[in-house]
Every structure is written in C-alpha cells, then in structure tokens.
Length: 532
Image 1 (spheres, helix red, strand yellow):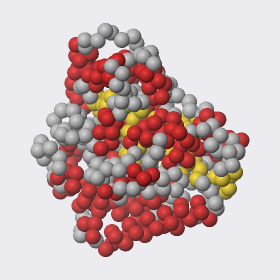
Image 2: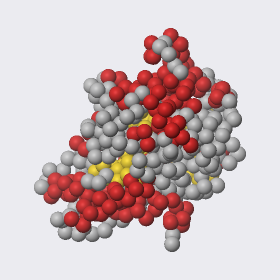
Image 3: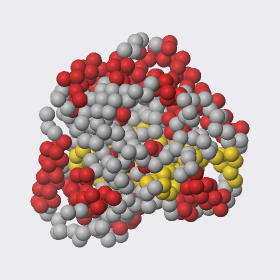
C-alpha cells in the first residue's frame, strides 16, 4: 500500500510537471491569504489574475505549510489543466459563472473523478470513482477547479469508541489546529476546516452527520453550514447514515457560503430524499443584507455545551451585537428538548452497515472490501489499520434485520419527533422566534495522543446538555456557524439554527452579524511552526 507521504509526493510532482509544461505565459503571482472566494471570483472576472495563478498560489501554500497540519491528503494531478481550461473559457467570453476557475477542496469522502476517495482508510486506497458525486458535478458545471482532497476523521468519525482511537486518519495522518498545533481541529471535517482557515483553497466542502461541519468550523475560526436535510445531494459520498448525512460549504465568509450553496443545492434523482430541494433552493446571495437582523426575534440558549466563565463574556458580547443590529432576543429554557444523543448514536449502527455496504457494492473492482465483515477483517490485519479500535464497525455488524428492524424504525421515529416537532420546531413556534442562537461549542481541546483508551461509558452521552449540532442534524434542521471571537487565543463560533429550508434567512442573519462584529481572527501559529 502507498503511504501518505508517497501519495503527496506523487501528486505534487504531477502538478509541478503540468505547471512546467503549461503553454500559457507565466501568470503574475496572486496573493491568496485571507482572500475571499467572492474576491477571487471578481478578480478572475475582471482579468486581474488567472485561474492558473490562483491555483498555483494555493498549491504553494499547501507545500509550504501543510507538513505540520496534515490538512491535505492529495492534490488533483490535473489541477493546473483545469485552471488552464477555465482561463481559456474566460478569454473566449464563455465563463460558466462565479465559480469558474475558483479552486475548491473536497473532504475525502466525496467522489471526484481522477482522485481516490479513501475516507481516510487504506481499505479504500484504490477507490478511484468513474463518476463524480452529484455535488462535484455541479461544481464542475460551474467551472470550479477541484483542487484536491482534504483529510478527515477516518470514516467520518464512525470507527472507534473506547478503544485505541485516533483523531485523524491512517491515510492523512493526525490533523492539527492552525491556531495551536497542540490542539484539536475537531472532526470529522477537520481537513476542510484547517484548509479554509489557512487559505489552502478559496473554500471547501465538508460532510456532517452529527456536527462534523459545525464543530471544525467553530474550532478553526471559519463559517460552516449544515443545510436542511437533503437540500444537497449525498449521491457519491461515502455514507454514515442516509437519514442524517449532509454535504455543506465551509468558507471564510458568509457571502462565500451563500455563493457555494447556491451552486450545490438542488434535487437529484439518484438521491430520492432530495426531491423537495428544487422547490426550496434559491440564490442565497440575494438575501445578504447588513440590516437583516432588524426586527428579527431570536431565541437564545445559554447552557449548552462549551458555556463557562471564559466563553460567557464572548457570547454576551455577540448577543449585544445582535441587539445593536435590531434583533429582539428571547431567552429559551435550556431543557426545552430531550437529549436523545444515545438513541441517535445507536440508530446509526443500522444505517452505517446498510448504507456503507450499498456504497461499497458500486465501488470499482480494485476495492476488495465489499461489506462490513470485510472491513472488520481488513482493519484487524492491515498494518496501518490494526493499530486502532473498531468498536463502531463491530456494533454496526452486530445489527440485524436491516432498516426494517422494528427497534430501528421505532428509534428513528422517536428521535426525529423529539428533536423536530417536539423539540426545535416547538421552541421556534412557542416562542415566536425566527431562529435559535447559541455558543457553538467551547475552544479546541488538547489533542488526545494516538492509541489513548477512553473509559467513558457510552451511555454518558445522554448526561448533561445535548449537543445542538447533533440535535439539529437528527431533526434535519439547518445550522450555521459564524466566527464569534477568541478564548485563550482560540476561536469560538455562534450558531444560528432555524426551521427546515430557512437557509436564506440564517445566512442573512449570519451575514449581518459578521459584518457588524468582524470577529474572525486569522490563525498565525501554523506559520511559526513552518518557519525555517
């Protein structure tokens, strides 16, 4: 099997060779650090730069800084060729839209032709899809440069609990927070979160089952959205559970989120759950206004995960910003919703087995793992994989009856009802609020060393306040994280949670808050670590 260093060396060599062979005149360098997607797009449209120059600039930053971060698994070998094609379209007056020529990274559980989709596991090292995922097809149709694959918590975090766990992936290594390399970047969309924060791409796509976009966005100081369930197609994405999985944008500004989501959203016959998406999607950039909070009634949650004496002043300041922008704030009791995290986690066992095996069935012939039993056997013997626990593989394999099992059916109905109509939906209607706001979570904790064994009982998930990012995911409600400030030199975010299909309103609220607070502080620690 190839190791990660070799994968990176091969892709870097391919890109440099393509760049050297380019028939275009050498483009002027383009400084990409902290430049928004919208600005890159505008500069391309105004012919102030070229896609080749922008793409090279991101590749150079990855080469310079990623060795200590482990954010990137692979760079697309045709990245420069994609950029050249975009530049030609623009020269011929045939640009495909605002994303044409803009480099975007993908979490490495999203299929894209020309790149392996590994989910961070050597079990899928030869998983080279013959067809793009639907979301990548939409990006390519818009002219985006698919720059490469970003690291993640292996299998999107659905591997181990209580055993010899690890924070990253065997293929990509352990990712590090760019604000403090000893800290966690959160998961499972760790690579996209780090990459966006450090300007390794204009933006990235992540996936979210129980907070895997929201957590990394908060801890890496960026904007991230988990859209309404099935607003964006999941076809061609390595699954955890079709009942909750979502693909969402991760960027440095709310405007960039809106641009990406406008391209990504929509119905897909290959993902039947998305049948309502076309009726609800819109151009999300059109709702972005600095006065969008004026007269808006928001429900405030104070006692959720991460709230303490250090985070409280930052959250209180954010609430003052919301009020100054004209929002009416209403306190909502923290216990308004039952904590169903234990049942939600248990229900994923059935889906993970069923949905992953459906994905593996259609994998290329080179992939030898075809079901959960194969994956367990591979993970117990392969040199890289056998070092880590597989408790969640085993609990998934132990399920019986598939998705028709009465225990599973009843559990899913219960948790959807408790988090949706009797939870978030009830709070929104009973208090007459347009959205809920809360501290997303606390600052990044220290990384847990590889192989550390956790003795925390599984049932302890149900103790204390629930994770709002998990509860919103179970309910299928949209959740937007926006940078809120710093605690001990580490970023924290504010979450805006709304009713299904309320993305335009949430993005508008987040935009108005962002423009009034200017709370994002770019990371610097990763640069010092890379200095000679």
